[in-house]
Length: 309
Image (cartoon, rainbow, N blue to C red; front, side, top):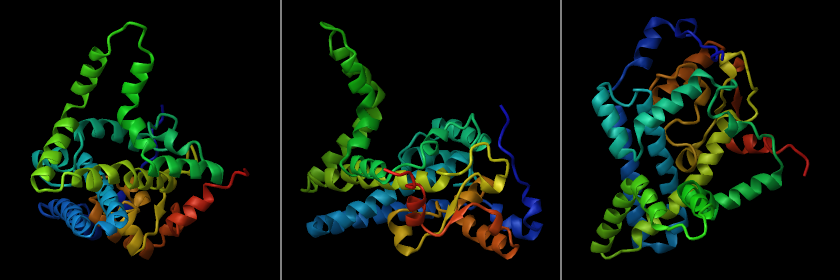
């Protein structure tokens, strides 16, 4: 199958402009990972001290959980640290994800962006949808249904297909083996919070954000990046959408420059912290008028809910 068209950075940047954009940093990526965990830690402390702040802390932590995924995504492109061993170790153990499996999958998305072989095409294909359909998705996200299906859907499916008299334990044992890392990490965290006298902290300030706000902002991010972007689009400047994000959106929806998605698809090996400068240089060159973009996340959601109920 044909791959998506690519761009040549030399067509958009001088050598002097491109070199600092593409440069790897031995500290910036690590600083962003540290910042992400610091925000999660600070929000947890605030929530424990003032439980009435729980709804806001869930939103802040859920957005930083997405932030860990964004930084792991940078690592999948080899952009988090110049040493590949450090790059992958940080992604694997500090960004809470299997980086190599994600890399194998995600690079196919870049190779075939918005083409028939794009493994992420199903995320954007259903749009536009009705407002009612979007509302149902939001409710499923915020009530934990989406998370439960993603986390335990395989188990529930196997249990539902179990024949009468077939033992349950082999199915459960297989699921435990598959999720053993998640189970070990969560058990250790619950024990640590219990030792600190707040046994409920892990549920309130990690699992709850992960099961609710993280699911919603991940959906919003996916919609903003590729929904209503033309399938089989020949123009590489229109394979993805950049969405303007203000301070509140960056705090609660789009951390670590994830909103610069068109620039990321054009120059996929740039570190995330280089994308705002790349955008400014492209604006200076008059290129951004040709790129897919939106003035904000709310405007994207309005555009994707244009199907009559």
